[in-house]
Length: 282
Image (cartoon, rainbow, N blue to C red):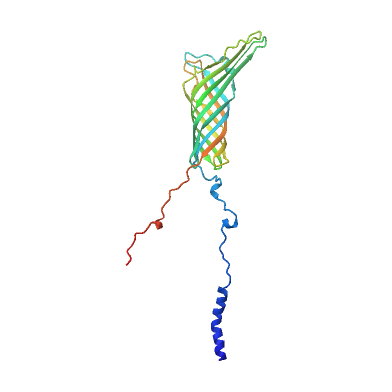
């Protein structure tokens, strides 16, 4: 009888131990969601990612400081005259203004097109050593240009650009301020003149640029992109006494505004979610 009791105890002891463990308190291994812990998970979509938006539509507006130079020579036709005092002219630096679009069309290529008001200046000054007479003039050429450039572009948030293109132009006006003092020091200057006569109807330049653009937010950038324009056509008409080609180093700077491209993607139906044809169940 005692042996039977011991045998019975040995047989049922594992079940008793298992029952004690199963009825004990088991802690959940699941982590509490962030909302329960009081810490909201940060949404990465709200952060500006410079790796995205390379193909955004971009518009820019800015100004520039133009350091000009020129090439001038007598007109070889019947209307030509010697250069005279024009050989002693000095170039005058002017402010310019531009606006347009500059967008990437490839990972390493961007295209720029826009409008620009380019200005070139010339001046001459003479003072007599024996009297109070003096003579000087200041010319300002205003041109409407349409620069079109193709850039090699490297970088994302900080972009380095270098490129070239063409710059067609249309002369807008030629302003001249002349100052004349006679031998007694009296001002006998004529009125300032503004004309377009004598200028060619249109022309074209080559343009070369290199600079940097820094995108400091999702919607805006700043840029400094100096450009050099090389005059290919004479700015004067065929019957003018001289021929002239204008060149300039234009230190351009300004702001660019980005309009992010659409990131919406077409929803592709999961083939598993397609309802299967109902089969007749026997």
